[in-house]
Length: 284
Image (tube, rainbow, N blue to C red; front, side, top):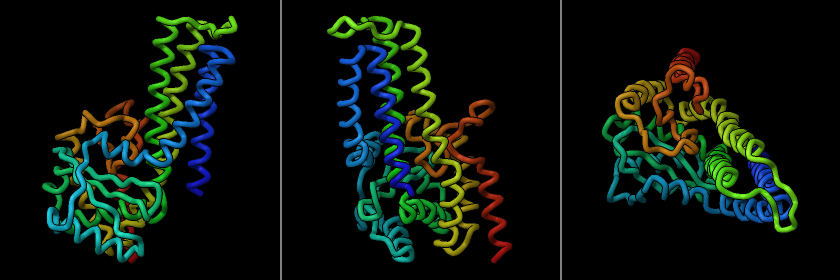
């Protein structure tokens, strides 16, 4: 199912690129953008995880460098019957974590130094179980590809606005591209599409990962207690330097989301996630 969604996202990216290329440069522009879209599809499938890790300067650690973290990941991976993911640490005070990779055999789990300082072992286990649930259910491919595509679409919108204002809109054959207003409107729509891609794949999958992680760790309260601390921790130290296109990958929204901004959050409300986890304890 997630593979089909990933293919759909790649088709959407191609359509957006070709349509905007046609508006900017007519038929020639469409051909150029189609070629760029094909390259982008290949890059996002094979290298999107490396792009995200490089974006946050994540550093791979060995068992000797982070024994407790490594032990928790190894234990949970064995319980989940998946290969041991590579373990990365992000030098960042804001407490958070994410998983990436194109499949369980090429998975990565990354945590910030802030989360390691904030959580105890049980709470850390709850968080890592959540992330490994994403790995087990193959959410990580579509999540990582969506991050790369959202960034590409947003960048494309910026290029389109710049071209409309400072460049021409005719191709080499003299065909007229769209006027400045149509290009600007389309670029805004493209940026909005990038946001919708993230929202479409994020909220429901977080609930499923919470449930799967609770089952994997053996105690829903491990994750519930962790989410309470993470909510306060991110409020105190938001990851304001984070790239918005990757926000949906983290276990909690790395930005402070209040008012209207909360309506477009890539994550469901933490209070609802905690309530669901606490209800799981009553059903046991």
